[in-house]
Amino acid sequence: MKLWGGRFTKETDELVNRFNASITFDKRFFKQDILGSIAHVTMLEKQGILTCDEKDAIVTGLKGILDDIENGSLVIDETAEDIHSFVEGTLIERIGEPGKKLHTGRSRNDQVALDMRLYIRDEIIEVNDLVKDLMKVIHRIMKENITTYMPGFTHLQKAQPVTFAHHMGAYFEMFRRDRGRLRDIYDRMNYCPLGAGALAGTTYPLDRNDTATLLKFDGPTFNSMDSVSDRDYLIELLSAFSTIMMHMSRLCEEVIMWNSDEYHFVEMDDTYSTGSSIMPQKKNPDIAELIRGKTGRVYGALTAILTTMKGIPLAYNKDMQEDKELTFDAVDTVKGCLALCEGMLDTMKINPEKMEASAKQGFTNATDAADYLVNHGVAFRDAHGIIGQLVLTCIEKGISLDELPLEEYKKISPVFEEDIYDAISMETCVERRNTIGAPGPTAMKAVIAMNEEYLEET
Ligand code: ARG
Image: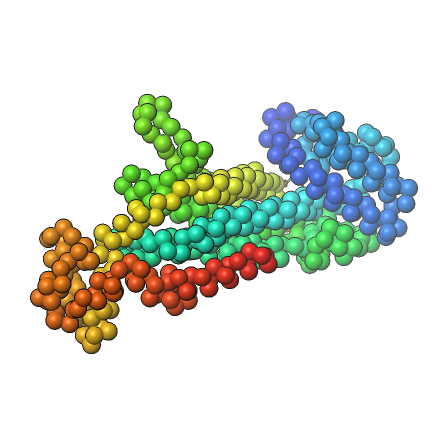
Protein backbone atom coordinates (compact mmCIF):
# COMPACT_ATOMS: atom_id res chain seq x y z
CA MET A 1 0.00 0.00 0.00
CA LYS A 2 1.22 3.46 -0.90
CA LEU A 3 0.88 6.02 1.89
CA TRP A 4 0.40 8.84 -0.60
CA GLY A 5 -1.04 9.35 -4.10
CA GLY A 6 -4.10 11.55 -3.59
CA ARG A 7 -2.62 14.54 -5.36
CA PHE A 8 -1.15 12.49 -8.22
CA THR A 9 -2.86 11.88 -11.52
CA LYS A 10 -0.40 9.34 -12.90
CA GLU A 11 1.29 6.24 -11.54
CA THR A 12 4.98 6.62 -10.73
CA ASP A 13 7.37 5.02 -13.15
CA GLU A 14 8.38 1.52 -12.07
CA LEU A 15 12.07 2.41 -12.09
CA VAL A 16 11.30 5.39 -9.84
CA ASN A 17 9.45 3.13 -7.44
CA ARG A 18 12.42 0.85 -7.15
CA PHE A 19 14.97 3.65 -6.93
CA ASN A 20 12.99 5.39 -4.22
CA ALA A 21 12.13 2.33 -2.16
CA SER A 22 14.02 1.35 0.98
CA ILE A 23 12.11 -1.76 2.02
CA THR A 24 14.88 -4.15 0.92
CA PHE A 25 17.07 -2.77 3.70
CA ASP A 26 14.85 -0.94 6.20
CA LYS A 27 12.85 -4.15 6.74
CA ARG A 28 15.71 -4.85 9.16
CA PHE A 29 14.05 -2.64 11.77
CA PHE A 30 10.48 -3.96 11.53
CA LYS A 31 10.50 -4.64 15.26
CA GLN A 32 11.60 -1.14 16.20
CA ASP A 33 9.02 0.31 13.80
CA ILE A 34 6.23 -1.66 15.46
CA LEU A 35 7.38 -0.91 19.03
CA GLY A 36 7.59 2.79 18.16
CA SER A 37 4.03 2.69 16.80
CA ILE A 38 2.75 0.92 19.90
CA ALA A 39 4.24 3.66 22.10
CA HIS A 40 2.79 6.33 19.82
CA VAL A 41 -0.79 5.03 19.97
CA THR A 42 -0.53 4.33 23.70
CA MET A 43 0.24 8.01 24.16
CA LEU A 44 -2.44 9.10 21.65
CA GLU A 45 -5.05 7.32 23.72
CA LYS A 46 -3.87 8.84 27.00
CA GLN A 47 -4.10 12.26 25.37
CA GLY A 48 -7.67 11.59 24.24
CA ILE A 49 -6.72 11.55 20.55
CA LEU A 50 -7.69 7.88 20.13
CA THR A 51 -10.40 5.97 21.99
CA CYS A 52 -9.43 3.08 24.19
CA ASP A 53 -11.02 0.62 21.72
CA GLU A 54 -9.14 2.12 18.79
CA LYS A 55 -5.85 1.94 20.69
CA ASP A 56 -6.51 -1.66 21.75
CA ALA A 57 -7.34 -2.71 18.21
CA ILE A 58 -4.20 -1.08 16.85
CA VAL A 59 -1.92 -2.49 19.55
CA THR A 60 -3.33 -6.00 19.15
CA GLY A 61 -3.00 -5.70 15.38
CA LEU A 62 0.60 -4.48 15.61
CA LYS A 63 1.57 -7.21 18.06
CA GLY A 64 0.05 -9.79 15.71
CA ILE A 65 2.10 -8.41 12.82
CA LEU A 66 5.26 -8.52 14.94
CA ASP A 67 4.63 -12.13 15.99
CA ASP A 68 3.82 -13.19 12.46
CA ILE A 69 6.95 -11.61 10.98
CA GLU A 70 9.04 -13.20 13.70
CA ASN A 71 7.52 -16.66 13.30
CA GLY A 72 7.75 -16.47 9.54
CA SER A 73 4.02 -16.59 8.76
CA LEU A 74 4.06 -13.01 7.45
CA VAL A 75 6.65 -12.29 4.79
CA ILE A 76 7.63 -8.65 4.32
CA ASP A 77 6.43 -7.62 0.86
CA GLU A 78 9.35 -6.08 -0.96
CA THR A 79 7.11 -4.25 -3.41
CA ALA A 80 6.11 -1.90 -0.58
CA GLU A 81 7.94 1.44 -0.46
CA ASP A 82 9.40 1.04 2.99
CA ILE A 83 8.88 -0.82 6.27
CA HIS A 84 6.61 1.96 7.57
CA SER A 85 4.22 1.60 4.60
CA PHE A 86 4.31 -2.17 4.88
CA VAL A 87 3.40 -2.24 8.59
CA GLU A 88 0.70 0.42 8.27
CA GLY A 89 -0.74 -1.20 5.14
CA THR A 90 -0.81 -4.64 6.72
CA LEU A 91 -2.45 -3.20 9.85
CA ILE A 92 -5.22 -1.57 7.83
CA GLU A 93 -5.74 -4.78 5.86
CA ARG A 94 -6.04 -6.73 9.10
CA ILE A 95 -8.07 -4.42 11.38
CA GLY A 96 -9.71 -1.95 9.00
CA GLU A 97 -10.79 1.56 10.12
CA PRO A 98 -8.83 1.97 13.41
CA GLY A 99 -5.64 1.13 11.52
CA LYS A 100 -6.09 4.29 9.48
CA LYS A 101 -5.58 6.33 12.65
CA LEU A 102 -2.14 4.95 13.47
CA HIS A 103 -0.29 7.73 11.69
CA THR A 104 -2.16 10.56 13.48
CA GLY A 105 0.29 13.25 14.60
CA ARG A 106 3.26 11.53 13.01
CA SER A 107 5.32 11.68 9.83
CA ARG A 108 7.62 9.10 8.36
CA ASN A 109 10.37 11.63 9.00
CA ASP A 110 10.14 11.40 12.77
CA GLN A 111 9.18 7.75 12.48
CA VAL A 112 12.31 6.76 10.60
CA ALA A 113 14.44 8.94 12.87
CA LEU A 114 12.98 7.01 15.80
CA ASP A 115 13.32 3.55 14.24
CA MET A 116 16.95 4.09 13.36
CA ARG A 117 17.77 5.33 16.85
CA LEU A 118 16.02 2.39 18.47
CA TYR A 119 17.86 0.01 16.18
CA ILE A 120 21.24 1.65 16.72
CA ARG A 121 20.74 1.71 20.47
CA ASP A 122 20.41 -2.10 20.48
CA GLU A 123 23.38 -2.51 18.18
CA ILE A 124 25.59 -0.31 20.35
CA ILE A 125 24.89 -2.64 23.26
CA GLU A 126 25.71 -5.69 21.15
CA VAL A 127 28.94 -4.23 19.77
CA ASN A 128 29.92 -3.12 23.26
CA ASP A 129 29.45 -6.69 24.52
CA LEU A 130 31.48 -8.10 21.64
CA VAL A 131 34.35 -5.72 22.38
CA LYS A 132 34.19 -6.88 25.98
CA ASP A 133 34.35 -10.55 24.92
CA LEU A 134 37.46 -9.77 22.91
CA MET A 135 38.95 -8.00 25.92
CA LYS A 136 38.30 -11.05 28.09
CA VAL A 137 40.44 -13.18 25.78
CA ILE A 138 43.17 -10.53 25.81
CA HIS A 139 42.93 -10.48 29.60
CA ARG A 140 43.36 -14.25 29.78
CA ILE A 141 46.40 -14.07 27.48
CA MET A 142 47.85 -11.31 29.65
CA LYS A 143 47.46 -13.30 32.84
CA GLU A 144 49.24 -16.26 31.27
CA ASN A 145 52.16 -14.31 29.83
CA ILE A 146 53.51 -12.04 32.57
CA THR A 147 56.99 -13.55 32.14
CA THR A 148 56.84 -14.28 28.41
CA TYR A 149 59.69 -12.02 27.27
CA MET A 150 59.63 -10.60 23.78
CA PRO A 151 61.22 -7.71 21.94
CA GLY A 152 59.36 -4.44 22.04
CA PHE A 153 59.74 -2.54 18.76
CA THR A 154 59.94 1.03 17.59
CA HIS A 155 60.29 1.67 13.84
CA LEU A 156 59.85 -2.12 13.61
CA GLN A 157 63.41 -2.33 15.00
CA LYS A 158 63.97 -4.22 18.20
CA ALA A 159 64.02 -1.65 20.99
CA GLN A 160 63.69 -2.90 24.56
CA PRO A 161 62.42 -6.14 26.05
CA VAL A 162 58.78 -6.28 27.08
CA THR A 163 56.46 -9.18 27.76
CA PHE A 164 53.64 -10.61 25.72
CA ALA A 165 51.29 -9.63 28.56
CA HIS A 166 52.44 -6.05 28.24
CA HIS A 167 52.14 -6.00 24.45
CA MET A 168 48.62 -7.41 24.56
CA GLY A 169 47.81 -5.02 27.39
CA ALA A 170 48.21 -2.15 24.94
CA TYR A 171 45.26 -3.55 22.97
CA PHE A 172 43.26 -3.97 26.16
CA GLU A 173 43.60 -0.20 26.67
CA MET A 174 42.56 0.58 23.10
CA PHE A 175 39.44 -1.52 23.38
CA ARG A 176 38.64 -0.04 26.79
CA ARG A 177 38.60 3.41 25.18
CA ASP A 178 36.49 2.06 22.33
CA ARG A 179 33.87 0.92 24.80
CA GLY A 180 33.97 4.32 26.45
CA ARG A 181 33.27 5.96 23.11
CA LEU A 182 30.29 3.68 22.49
CA ARG A 183 28.91 4.58 25.92
CA ASP A 184 29.31 8.31 25.22
CA ILE A 185 27.53 8.00 21.89
CA TYR A 186 24.70 6.06 23.48
CA ASP A 187 24.20 8.72 26.14
CA ARG A 188 24.30 11.57 23.64
CA MET A 189 21.90 9.98 21.15
CA ASN A 190 19.37 8.66 23.66
CA TYR A 191 16.69 11.31 23.05
CA CYS A 192 13.42 10.62 21.35
CA PRO A 193 12.60 12.35 18.04
CA LEU A 194 9.02 11.01 17.92
CA GLY A 195 6.54 13.88 17.83
CA ALA A 196 8.75 16.09 15.69
CA GLY A 197 6.36 15.32 12.84
CA ALA A 198 7.52 16.12 9.32
CA LEU A 199 9.65 19.02 10.59
CA ALA A 200 7.48 21.42 12.58
CA GLY A 201 5.93 19.37 15.35
CA THR A 202 2.20 18.81 15.28
CA THR A 203 -1.04 20.51 16.24
CA TYR A 204 -2.22 17.49 18.25
CA PRO A 205 -1.61 17.65 22.00
CA LEU A 206 1.04 14.92 21.93
CA ASP A 207 2.87 14.10 25.14
CA ARG A 208 6.41 13.74 23.91
CA ASN A 209 7.74 13.06 27.38
CA ASP A 210 5.43 10.08 27.62
CA THR A 211 6.56 8.42 24.38
CA ALA A 212 10.18 9.13 25.30
CA THR A 213 9.68 7.37 28.64
CA LEU A 214 7.75 4.47 27.11
CA LEU A 215 10.64 3.88 24.71
CA LYS A 216 13.29 4.24 27.44
CA PHE A 217 14.84 7.44 26.17
CA ASP A 218 16.27 10.05 28.52
CA GLY A 219 13.74 12.56 27.18
CA PRO A 220 12.42 14.09 23.96
CA THR A 221 14.61 16.00 21.49
CA PHE A 222 14.29 19.80 21.69
CA ASN A 223 14.08 21.01 18.11
CA SER A 224 11.75 19.34 15.65
CA MET A 225 13.74 20.38 12.57
CA ASP A 226 16.94 19.01 14.04
CA SER A 227 15.11 15.87 15.19
CA VAL A 228 14.25 14.79 11.67
CA SER A 229 17.53 15.77 10.07
CA ASP A 230 20.16 14.91 12.67
CA ARG A 231 22.43 12.05 11.70
CA ASP A 232 25.35 13.12 13.94
CA TYR A 233 25.01 10.03 16.09
CA LEU A 234 25.56 7.82 13.05
CA ILE A 235 28.64 9.80 12.11
CA GLU A 236 29.95 9.43 15.66
CA LEU A 237 29.09 5.75 15.63
CA LEU A 238 30.84 5.11 12.32
CA SER A 239 33.82 7.02 13.61
CA ALA A 240 33.90 4.86 16.76
CA PHE A 241 33.47 1.76 14.59
CA SER A 242 36.33 2.93 12.37
CA THR A 243 38.53 3.25 15.44
CA ILE A 244 37.56 -0.23 16.65
CA MET A 245 38.39 -1.59 13.20
CA MET A 246 41.68 0.32 13.15
CA HIS A 247 42.63 -1.23 16.48
CA MET A 248 41.69 -4.70 15.33
CA SER A 249 43.53 -4.13 12.08
CA ARG A 250 46.75 -3.21 13.87
CA LEU A 251 46.43 -6.27 16.06
CA CYS A 252 45.76 -8.44 13.01
CA GLU A 253 48.75 -6.97 11.21
CA GLU A 254 50.94 -7.97 14.16
CA VAL A 255 49.40 -11.42 14.34
CA ILE A 256 50.10 -11.90 10.64
CA MET A 257 53.76 -10.96 11.17
CA TRP A 258 54.11 -13.03 14.33
CA ASN A 259 52.57 -16.01 12.57
CA SER A 260 55.07 -15.82 9.70
CA ASP A 261 58.03 -18.20 9.49
CA GLU A 262 60.39 -15.29 10.10
CA TYR A 263 58.91 -14.58 13.52
CA HIS A 264 57.08 -17.67 14.58
CA PHE A 265 56.03 -15.95 17.82
CA VAL A 266 52.55 -17.41 17.47
CA GLU A 267 50.76 -20.02 15.45
CA MET A 268 47.25 -19.67 14.15
CA ASP A 269 45.05 -22.62 14.95
CA ASP A 270 43.99 -24.78 12.00
CA THR A 271 40.40 -23.78 12.67
CA TYR A 272 41.30 -20.14 11.95
CA SER A 273 43.62 -20.70 8.99
CA THR A 274 43.14 -21.45 5.33
CA GLY A 275 45.14 -23.31 2.71
CA SER A 276 46.33 -22.65 -0.82
CA SER A 277 44.88 -24.27 -3.92
CA ILE A 278 48.35 -24.71 -5.41
CA MET A 279 50.96 -24.67 -2.62
CA PRO A 280 50.38 -27.64 -0.33
CA GLN A 281 52.61 -26.34 2.47
CA LYS A 282 50.60 -23.16 3.03
CA LYS A 283 48.62 -22.26 6.10
CA ASN A 284 47.48 -18.69 5.67
CA PRO A 285 46.15 -16.20 8.23
CA ASP A 286 43.25 -15.16 6.00
CA ILE A 287 40.97 -14.22 8.87
CA ALA A 288 43.43 -11.66 10.23
CA GLU A 289 43.96 -10.34 6.70
CA LEU A 290 40.24 -10.04 6.08
CA ILE A 291 39.68 -8.13 9.30
CA ARG A 292 42.51 -5.80 8.27
CA GLY A 293 40.96 -5.51 4.81
CA LYS A 294 37.42 -4.86 6.00
CA THR A 295 38.64 -1.88 7.98
CA GLY A 296 38.66 0.10 4.74
CA ARG A 297 35.03 -0.74 4.21
CA VAL A 298 34.01 0.77 7.55
CA TYR A 299 36.10 3.90 6.91
CA GLY A 300 34.26 4.08 3.58
CA ALA A 301 30.91 4.18 5.37
CA LEU A 302 32.11 7.05 7.57
CA THR A 303 33.35 9.03 4.59
CA ALA A 304 30.16 8.32 2.66
CA ILE A 305 27.84 9.60 5.38
CA LEU A 306 29.94 12.68 6.05
CA THR A 307 29.82 13.46 2.37
CA THR A 308 26.10 12.81 2.08
CA MET A 309 25.29 15.08 5.01
CA LYS A 310 27.50 18.01 4.19
CA GLY A 311 25.25 19.81 1.72
CA ILE A 312 21.78 18.99 2.99
CA PRO A 313 19.59 21.98 3.87
CA LEU A 314 17.20 21.66 6.79
CA ALA A 315 15.10 19.71 7.40
CA TYR A 316 14.49 16.15 6.08
CA ASN A 317 15.71 15.31 2.57
CA LYS A 318 15.64 11.93 0.92
CA ASP A 319 19.43 11.86 0.73
CA MET A 320 19.27 10.75 4.34
CA GLN A 321 17.83 7.40 3.36
CA GLU A 322 21.40 6.63 2.29
CA ASP A 323 22.42 6.44 5.96
CA LYS A 324 20.89 2.97 6.30
CA GLU A 325 22.68 0.58 3.96
CA LEU A 326 26.10 1.87 4.84
CA THR A 327 25.42 1.85 8.58
CA PHE A 328 23.92 -1.63 8.43
CA ASP A 329 26.90 -2.88 6.48
CA ALA A 330 29.28 -1.32 9.00
CA VAL A 331 27.34 -2.84 11.93
CA ASP A 332 27.50 -6.30 10.34
CA THR A 333 31.16 -5.90 9.48
CA VAL A 334 32.25 -4.73 12.93
CA LYS A 335 30.23 -7.41 14.71
CA GLY A 336 31.54 -10.16 12.45
CA CYS A 337 35.14 -9.02 12.77
CA LEU A 338 34.96 -8.71 16.56
CA ALA A 339 33.62 -12.24 16.94
CA LEU A 340 36.24 -13.67 14.58
CA CYS A 341 39.07 -11.73 16.14
CA GLU A 342 38.08 -13.10 19.52
CA GLY A 343 38.03 -16.70 18.28
CA MET A 344 41.29 -16.26 16.41
CA LEU A 345 43.12 -14.96 19.49
CA ASP A 346 41.53 -17.49 21.78
CA THR A 347 42.79 -20.42 19.71
CA MET A 348 46.19 -18.93 18.84
CA LYS A 349 49.23 -20.82 20.14
CA ILE A 350 51.97 -18.71 21.70
CA ASN A 351 55.69 -19.64 21.37
CA PRO A 352 57.46 -18.05 24.36
CA GLU A 353 60.87 -19.55 23.45
CA LYS A 354 60.83 -17.90 20.02
CA MET A 355 59.83 -14.58 21.51
CA GLU A 356 62.55 -14.68 24.13
CA ALA A 357 65.23 -15.79 21.66
CA SER A 358 64.27 -12.91 19.39
CA ALA A 359 64.45 -10.42 22.28
CA LYS A 360 67.97 -11.66 23.11
CA GLN A 361 69.21 -11.28 19.56
CA GLY A 362 68.41 -7.68 18.90
CA PHE A 363 70.37 -5.80 21.62
CA THR A 364 67.09 -4.99 23.32
CA ASN A 365 69.08 -4.88 26.57
CA ALA A 366 71.46 -2.14 25.34
CA THR A 367 69.62 0.59 27.30
CA ASP A 368 69.89 -1.52 30.44
CA ALA A 369 73.63 -1.99 29.83
CA ALA A 370 73.95 1.80 29.65
CA ASP A 371 71.88 2.13 32.83
CA TYR A 372 74.35 -0.27 34.51
CA LEU A 373 77.13 2.21 33.82
CA VAL A 374 75.00 5.12 35.00
CA ASN A 375 74.39 3.25 38.26
CA HIS A 376 78.18 3.00 38.57
CA GLY A 377 78.67 6.75 38.23
CA VAL A 378 79.12 7.15 34.46
CA ALA A 379 77.14 10.00 32.85
CA PHE A 380 74.33 8.70 30.62
CA ARG A 381 75.66 10.31 27.43
CA ASP A 382 79.09 8.67 27.96
CA ALA A 383 77.43 5.37 28.86
CA HIS A 384 75.41 5.54 25.63
CA GLY A 385 78.65 5.92 23.63
CA ILE A 386 80.39 3.05 25.44
CA ILE A 387 77.53 0.62 24.90
CA GLY A 388 77.30 1.73 21.27
CA GLN A 389 80.90 0.63 20.79
CA LEU A 390 80.21 -2.68 22.51
CA VAL A 391 77.20 -3.28 20.27
CA LEU A 392 79.45 -2.68 17.26
CA THR A 393 81.95 -5.24 18.56
CA CYS A 394 79.12 -7.74 19.04
CA ILE A 395 77.79 -7.12 15.53
CA GLU A 396 81.29 -7.75 14.12
CA LYS A 397 81.55 -10.98 16.12
CA GLY A 398 77.97 -12.03 15.40
CA ILE A 399 77.09 -12.41 19.09
CA SER A 400 74.78 -10.79 21.63
CA LEU A 401 75.74 -8.55 24.55
CA ASP A 402 75.30 -11.36 27.07
CA GLU A 403 77.69 -13.55 25.04
CA LEU A 404 80.47 -10.94 25.00
CA PRO A 405 83.34 -11.93 27.39
CA LEU A 406 84.01 -9.71 30.40
CA GLU A 407 87.54 -8.82 29.06
CA GLU A 408 85.92 -7.17 26.07
CA TYR A 409 83.68 -5.15 28.38
CA LYS A 410 86.64 -4.17 30.54
CA LYS A 411 88.68 -3.14 27.50
CA ILE A 412 86.20 -0.34 26.92
CA SER A 413 85.37 0.51 30.52
CA PRO A 414 86.92 -0.77 33.76
CA VAL A 415 83.61 -0.18 35.52
CA PHE A 416 82.17 -3.47 34.20
CA GLU A 417 82.17 -6.46 36.56
CA GLU A 418 80.74 -9.98 36.43
CA ASP A 419 77.32 -8.68 37.54
CA ILE A 420 76.83 -6.99 34.14
CA TYR A 421 75.43 -10.30 32.85
CA ASP A 422 72.76 -10.34 35.48
CA ALA A 423 72.00 -6.67 34.86
CA ILE A 424 71.29 -7.27 31.17
CA SER A 425 69.39 -10.56 31.39
CA MET A 426 65.86 -10.46 29.99
CA GLU A 427 64.45 -11.13 33.45
CA THR A 428 66.30 -8.22 35.00
CA CYS A 429 65.55 -5.86 32.13
CA VAL A 430 61.83 -6.50 32.45
CA GLU A 431 61.65 -6.98 36.18
CA ARG A 432 63.17 -3.62 36.94
CA ARG A 433 60.56 -1.74 34.92
CA ASN A 434 57.87 -1.45 37.53
CA THR A 435 56.44 2.03 37.23
CA ILE A 436 52.71 1.80 36.63
CA GLY A 437 52.04 0.91 33.00
CA ALA A 438 55.48 -0.67 32.51
CA PRO A 439 56.08 -4.37 31.69
CA GLY A 440 57.64 -5.36 35.04
CA PRO A 441 55.70 -8.12 36.83
CA THR A 442 54.71 -5.99 39.83
CA ALA A 443 53.32 -3.23 37.62
CA MET A 444 51.74 -5.74 35.26
CA LYS A 445 49.99 -7.61 38.04
CA ALA A 446 48.60 -4.36 39.42
CA VAL A 447 47.17 -3.45 36.00
CA ILE A 448 45.79 -6.95 35.46
CA ALA A 449 44.03 -6.73 38.83
CA MET A 450 42.47 -3.40 37.82
CA ASN A 451 41.46 -4.87 34.46
CA GLU A 452 39.85 -7.79 36.26
CA GLU A 453 37.72 -5.36 38.26
CA TYR A 454 36.86 -3.40 35.12
CA LEU A 455 35.65 -6.57 33.40
CA GLU A 456 33.54 -7.49 36.40
CA GLU A 457 31.98 -4.06 36.74
CA THR A 458 31.33 -2.80 33.22
N1 ARG B 1 12.83 5.56 3.82
C1 ARG B 1 12.90 6.89 4.29
C2 ARG B 1 14.26 7.13 4.91
O1 ARG B 1 14.93 6.21 5.17
C3 ARG B 1 11.83 7.13 5.30
C4 ARG B 1 11.40 8.55 5.44
C5 ARG B 1 10.59 8.95 4.26
N2 ARG B 1 10.14 10.29 4.35
C6 ARG B 1 9.76 11.00 3.29
N3 ARG B 1 9.44 12.20 3.49
N4 ARG B 1 9.74 10.48 2.11
O2 ARG B 1 14.67 8.24 5.11
